[in-house]
Length: 285
Image (cartoon, rainbow, N blue to C red; front, side, top):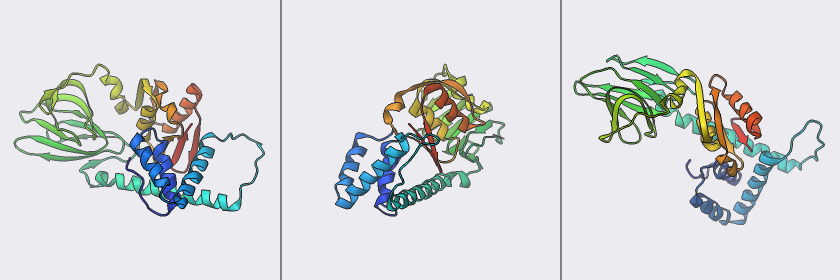
């Protein structure tokens, strides 16, 4: 996630920092930059304290039916509503920016959608959620570009090599079954394929890693931060950890992709975590 940038005002920036710092992906350098940001002026420091306080309330304040509450000062309520609205706008804008490659590709899927297509050579491609693929076959090679998301390729036997371009090094095969993510992660299920000329081994857990094509997510001792990052790919909005120490919690199970929200509910029941739902945002604590 990129470092927060000035967009509307200090309150927006301060909340953006909190989303990053509690996402489970913040580095020590990110935390140092946040401290320097807070020291830029008294106004920056105050905005940081208020955002930290609001985040604490969202992540840890007990909520129960019939609980008596002391009304907050009107100015604080207006500030909280303002930054919540700003956060929604930021997430919507960020989601729209992420979808640009999807809209311009030859084949694409929306968030939560999957699509199976047959290419000109007979190869089968299954596009995962929010994925995009462009095709550029020639007499010498069968080249495709994965512009977003993830795809499962079942390549037809053909004298021309089948090349998948990603953000990393190209994946090359002839007749194989493998999945590829935009970040360059490859899972070989059958046949032979290589990255940068180095052959890949068939993954022992290929069936589990490609279970998404069957409408399932399978986790075996995966950290909660990875589980949430995976789930986020299948629904609108963000999922963040308010307590980064929870990110190491080991999660195992088989979950149904037809109802991503039910997965969060299942995690609450099985592992004792709590989820606070806000517009375009789910906070796990």
